[in-house]
Image 1: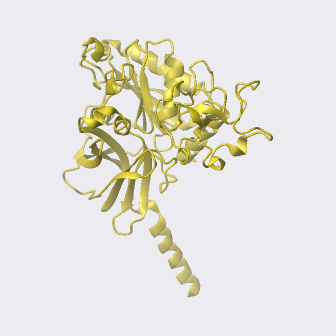
Image 2: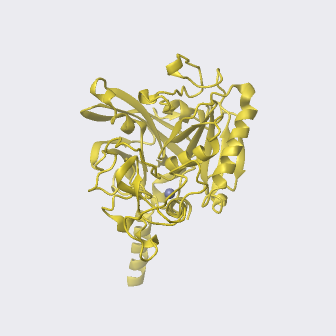
Length: 422
Ligand SMILES: [Zn+2]
């Protein structure tokens, strides 16, 4: 009797604790929001719910985020409150709120997030963190998976695409989509060539090379009407698949797309989790936003190191290990430890690479007389010449000339890959 009771209890607990009882890995729920604000306000509003077949995301470590990020989204069982899935991210909106433009105008930014479809009523909470890592905006809403207004994207035309590296089923692998921007249909072969160069460059870097069998890379040749991208400074506006343009936030070399819904609609029908956008232009520019996208330009001499660097941001949430000579602003505070794994303010260094420091390494460490990949605590990182420290004299996250990720970045990337796939 007792044994039976324990067995029943075990089964009951097993069921109630198992995320699979309320998640349907057969479909993806895409949640589209507008993040709006100005100097004094932040708001989150729901735009639309969509769904499509399959779930390419992770199936392990569902109830915790791999990194804190600048925001997170959490899916909970509406009845029990149990966390079914969560993911962290950064956004262009949060970069914009640091600009002077916020004093004159309120703007809205599109954001799309992919969640495994719940089988029953679920609550979704989105949070945005400020530079002090405190919650700055939060919004919770309930989703009924049977809601007739969840737009089904199954019949959207699937864009032409080609697998460049396929190591297994999307359910088991990390799926990276490489998307064409500013390539006409006639330029598809140029795009596939650049996409192949991207895959080769990423896999030539450790730990991606030795973990290659955990990734799929698919190139999506979404055609643009015009070749090249928009350059507002020269008055050139082009009609391209993702409407990307330079001079984002009036910064001349900052090339981004604000059209997240167009981007995700183009990917409907193709399994994807991480996104790299290749822009058909020669001007140096681009960026990488953690769990949003990498966007970089293909006809620049530094294309290969830059695309890997930006993927370090968008895939792995790594910080920039370079600093500007003048103090560019306060991006990090001495009393707050950055969440980026390759940066420290020494506020909580034990959580970072302290365990990797060779015995007797002075903290901080002078780069004089040290090898290029000798681990230390070198001042100058995260755009700030003082108060932020990096692990290595040089790294892929510091210069285009360096040929590898430093050992600390390598460990951070490997931990993330294992978090998603082990
Ligand atoms: Zn590094």
